[in-house]
Amino acid sequence: VYIMVSLFIGLFASIAMIAFAMISGGDMGAFIDLPAFLIVAGLAFFYSLASGGDFLERIENFGFGAVRAGWIGLLIGLVLIFKAHSNDPNLENMLPAFAVAFLTPFYGYVFQFITNMIVNHYDNQIETNEE
Image 1 (cartoon, rainbow, N blue to C red):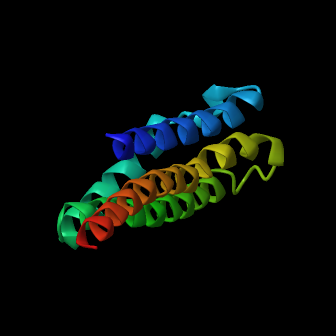
Image 2 (cartoon, helix red, strand yellow):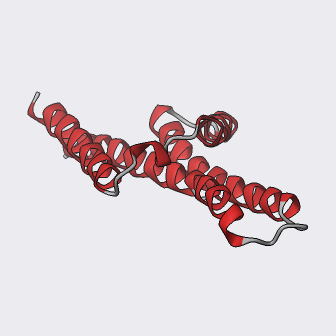
């Protein structure tokens, strides 16, 4: 029971600290973009599905896939930004689009952060039980 409680406390406190950092910046809404979230979560899900393995390996692969999906999302976003603003190189018009494009790696690393905590927790459980 203690071991599960430590996982939930660690996950909750970590997510709370990330949320606090976002809120302390003044605008939590700047970190919310549904299409970016869906691209990262969807690609990570299909990456973990295709990678196979047992349950923990799939969770770990979800985190790896999320980071890769985040970088793919950033590159797609940059291409779209440069295409849309090729005739209007005014940086002030491009900054909001850059902010959204950088959300995909952010989401990817947050997913990987969470999945690593879960996988490491259960890996340590398995090692402890084997000893």
